[in-house]
Image 1: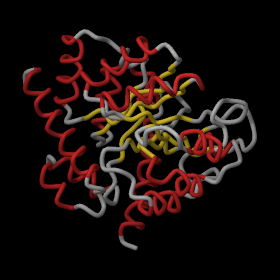
Image 2: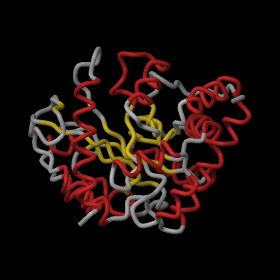
Image 3: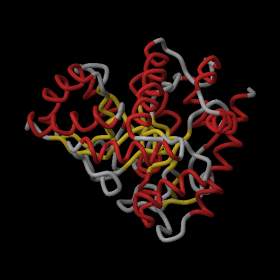
Image 4: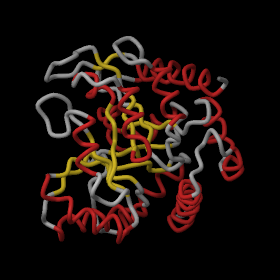
Length: 296
């Protein structure tokens, strides 16, 4: 597949998902969307109870970008949220086309990119939006400075893209869900949230309640469990082995109608040199929980 074909296929997929989301559709209540997916993607959606579960590439940071893409494909995943170490922002169309070709080879799409910092420097902010638009990124996981919101409000309207504010746990900005939820209400609805569930656990927030609160502004989820409640440093564990109610999380995502083109990303931060066995266990637990919810 050449780069032009790869770009065309990705554009088609992104437009399909975007149209579905605009209509309020979700994977679990809009089975007609499956007709536009490859057989492998259909199998993945079925495995995860109607959810398009992907992975944050930081989980695969020990492999380099090519290795991370190959590992994601081996895991049967078709959506990837890149961190900048794997996909540095660029305005070089050739490099973007090369990445599109790599992803298309493995039938993978970009669900999000981040976590990206933003300031009040509008021109600098716009450079990232230009990259994201060229790369087909719909959701930008972000850690925006308080003085950046006026700029971001203009940019999400201009580029029709989303900012998904990512929480980083105790002592960091956007610690508590209720505070960040209140902070965005005056801005365009495309400024919303990427809920890192492990970090919210450490902050003392219940991830299920967080999802219900953030509701229709929730555009990203880092599906992650943690054991270090109230501590500055996190300790990821296999899903369900810490404090995360995995079934409750999927029930909440279904309840709030998590968008078809959102970024639902497994994130496992431990054992970066060889995390595959743990990631596979996490995926199986997620699949079992999601299918339970789908059948309820």
